Amino acid sequence: MLSERMLSLGLQSSVIRDIFEYGLKRKKEIGNNNVFDFSLGNPSVPPPKEVNQILMHLIETIPAEKLHGYTSGPGGQCVRSAVADYIKNSFDFAATSDLIYLTCGAAAGLAISLNALTTEQDEVIILAPFFPEYRVFIEHTGANPVIVQSKTDDFKPDFELLAEAITEKTKAVIINSPNNPTGTCYTKETIQELADLLNKKQAEFNQVIYLLSDGPYQELVYDIELPFIPDYYDNTIIIYSFSKSLSLAGERIGYIFVSPKTKNANKVFASICGAGRSLGYVCAPSLFQFLIKECIGLTADLSVYKKNRDLLYNGLINLGFEAIYPDGAFYLFVKSPFKNAKKFCEKAKEYELLLVPSDSFGTQGFVRIAYCVSTEQIINSLPAFNKLAKELNLL
Image 1 (spheres, rainbow, N blue to C red):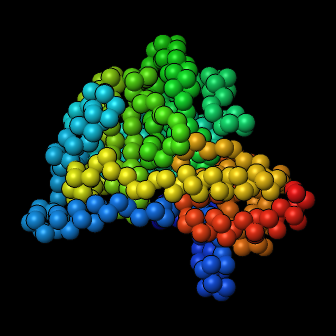
Image 2: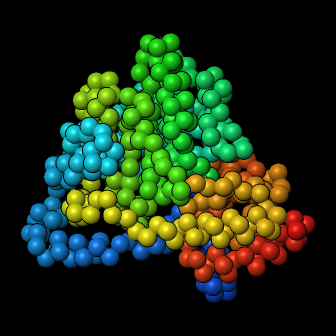
């Protein structure tokens, strides 16, 4: 007898992946340059040149049995120390390698952390719109996802709704800043207000509420500065991936950092180790652990995304579309001219524009456009958006 729940997940295809697969089919039919695929958040900017250089050096100088062999379950000690040093030097925050767990990207980091923290009937709050897999990760633990809608003018937290949603069952709140799918960034004022609310609720219910910060877009910010969340709230766990900053999405390398200010931080970390073991997430890819040690702090040329944002945002606004101005990440959240965002996406397909409806992100009435594509694609897509705008009488 199969697990009905796992079978259901396996049969439920991702809307984003469906659109991506449709795009591959259309490109074969009419040519790559005639399809404007904005579905996947897959970095188009190449990794910094140092990445290949370091990889070649590692392959040539480190014995194969070490380079490709197992590390300790939480990751190589030298790599964890390098991550801790980076956090200390970058954010002037006390970090120790003993509270860092290397993971197969941020997805594994979230799955591990949620399994470490929650039990059945616990509640985990997610702020909509959100990365769709949050719900899957939470439900796998037996906990219940509680969805709280953000303010639709800027997609910052609606603190009144959030305060109402926090109960004695609340074990954690997940935040994602810069946000996928909106590009919204939380300022220090927002984080301080969030910290004040969580501290108040912790005192009210006499229990710890963890703040899980999903931060793979941490370096992708434009003209603003992000606050370092553990400075504001003690019970914080950072989940990070090098997928976007180094353009290594397919290599699946990241880490979990438990703030040393977290209550019983060492026990929390031990639980994370136990969750990693139970899920089979033991020992992140060794080659890329060694890579991270040598190039932590480097980034790809992220300025390309800022250029793409400006071209696309200004282009669409001039055509009469409404969009949330993104301060980070590489997504544009555009208001659908139809109440049904899926209908808008189907209409856009007629012009070979592949957009993602917001329904799977927990919010209705918008579409996500991933502008982590070539600048050439942005420029070439604008005439198609122009035709779409004319048909919809936006001009």
